[in-house]
Image (cartoon, rainbow, N blue to C red; front, side):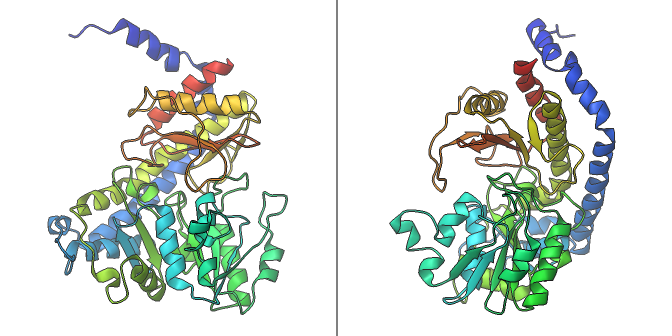
Length: 425
């Protein structure tokens, strides 16, 4: 029998076992955890059924080289994603460099000079502003949507926090080609959008203009609820494979799903007209993407439990957090509002110090491409930039919000929260 490492034993008990605050919070969260488990089980069956219905087999793990023609595994992978998200067609590719790249292909593929896009959630996520062309240097702006003749407008939020459905209705007419619906809050303090709110937006838009494309940035929202946006009226969705649907093991890429013609247009933008979704070698990533999707409902479930625990604990110690522990969840992100830069930095530094990768590194605020303000980022992840793995970040601007997301397993999130709150005990 191996002797117990006394230092480890003491540190473990100090961090977890003697933390009455965490124990009490978990007892009070039983009902919320049961609801999350129910959503997990529903989504796991949905994913499993898509695998079975499409007869996924070991031969679908092998890829072709060169142009990537006649790739059976790639075709089946697209069909599985299409079934999971209730789409006419899906495009799942490692060639997407990021979620922003995936979204940009949807925008540039479906908008022509003279078309108009309206963001109905106020200002979109920081990196999208350069794609649209409202921010960025001269060289960046020349490649933006606006530079290509696309018109753009925003529907402001009510009090910077709530959707203004009346204003959305007034903003939509026959001239609007597409509405951008960003499901997650991004670096804002508004509430992320539940599927019910996305449904209401789509209903308003379609009543005013049946031909308008309802495009949902689905990042951070996959498998958080039982229903996905395409099931409630959205025409097109997109997301990143190093977020929820990749299950924490996919190394790169993104997905697009929705009506076939809109997906095909986005595919032409990713590759080239005439190639579309028929080309592109997948570099032996099929198995990881299949397996990551299969794992995703459970991984998302653990991340949600970690977010709910954070909401409860930080509320107990006096910080404002959003969403509240008992609110309906729309994504995996938890806001903790510190109202000062120092606790935001401490939060991120502690998360980094308890990361499995680069735990010895100290994050500092710095300018990051695509962001207007300095940003502090904690992300000691196995996949660079993966936000289904436990990470935390925030722009160094009032009200100094930490955006915590992810967690490959609940235990890791629990350890990190336990360490952070020691500073306030």
